Each structure stands twice: as C-alpha cells, then as structure tokens.
Length: 183
Length: 107
Image (tube, rainbow over the protein chains, first blue to last red):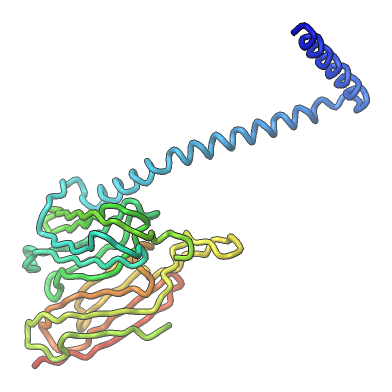
C-alpha cells in the first residue's frame, strides 16, 4: 500500500518534471496543448449534439406528422367514417403495399370530397401523397401502391367541401421495410 | 421517358357511366434517402404531380411523395359525362413529362 502510494507520487513528480522539461524544450508552447484540449472539447460537444439530435428525432417526426395533419384539417377534428380503407394486415414487402381508398360522397357541387391525404407516420417523410377532386367528373375511388418503412398505422384523411374532415386508420405489419438495404 | 400502360374498363360508356382507369408508368421514384455503393446519397427523383382531365375538365389530381412505390400505379374512376379526350400527365422532379391520351366515345 505504502509502496504503491510512493510509486504514484514518483510517477506524478516524474510527469511534472518531464512536462517542465518538455515545455522548456518546446520554448513554452503551452498554447498547442490548449488547442488540443479545445479540439477534444469540440469533439465532446459534437458528440453531445449528435446524441441530442438522435434523441430528438422521433419527437420531430411526430411533430412533422402533427403539423401535416393540422395543416390538412385546418382546426377541424377528424371524424371516423365515410372512408373505406383497404390495406392488407400484413405486408411482406414494404416497397409496394396496395392501398384502396373509397370515400362515400355524392360528388355534387354542394357536397363533395375535395381532398384526400395519405399519412404513414413512421416513414422518413410521413406525407405519402395527396389527391384533389372537383365536382363533376370525379369519383373518390383510388387504388395505388405505397412504401412503408416499418410496421405502423396508415391514416387516410378526407376533406369535404364544407371543411369537415373524416379519417380512417389501419395498422399494417410490415415484414421487410421499404428502407431495408438492397430493397 | 417510357410510355405509360393504361387500361379502361369501357372506352365507349353510356353517358354518366362510371369508368375505371388503371395506369402505370415506369419511374424509379428515388427517395433521396438511399446511398449508392460508394456511400453517396442518391438524389431525389420522384414523380411529384399527376393529373387527369376529360376535355380539359378536371378528373383527378395527385401529388405523390417519396412514399409512393417505384413505377407508380394508380387506379381511379370518373363519370363519363361527355365524349372526348381523357388526358393524363405525369411530371417528375427533373420536369420530365409523360403524357397519355385516351379517346372516349359515348355509346
């Protein structure tokens, strides 16, 4: 115990001695050491920033989805109904998931569906696509294929000409995500 | 650009009949998230606009995002209120345009 202590003191004094010799030899170039320290600090800062970013990412994605839906609904609360959303419960290939959308609307000038928004909240960009309709020739019936990054709930919003918003949600289990390497 | 493949349930429908249209175009729909073998990000290139009109009257407009599959497939319906030209246009990020026209006659 005592020996170890003594050796510790010895190394410390040795180090101090070497440092003073080194500093003298270098003509007192302390700033270089300072620079190195500050560089290390910069790295540490970067590390913290990256960690913070990684921590914040999910919440910003959720915020992005919220903003997207908020912009579409324009203050109205989406009501379940009027939309027939057809998606398989399980999708083997996230690169191509068939989606069928039917909106119950007479499509007259007084009462028609004007917009449809497809949202996949766990995709890198939650907005999958949107559709616009005008009364007359349009029929709110669609079928398309979308990408899903992972297992998630797909939401479809439909806006009527009076501003009311309807929503349909369906959970999809994705076996191979669209973002899988080589996919 | 490739020629789109289009199928119509009825090219000479009765007036007011609902016609189904199936369309598919060849397009990579590059998301901009993918990296190539050298680790460089592959720039985004997607079809960002599609519209269909019958004699200039709007049938449907579509704004695809990166979440739409490659070689975008779209099936939609319209009311055949008049005879004429059913015109479809796809536009991508490089402003390349794909156009298709189908003649509609009323039975």
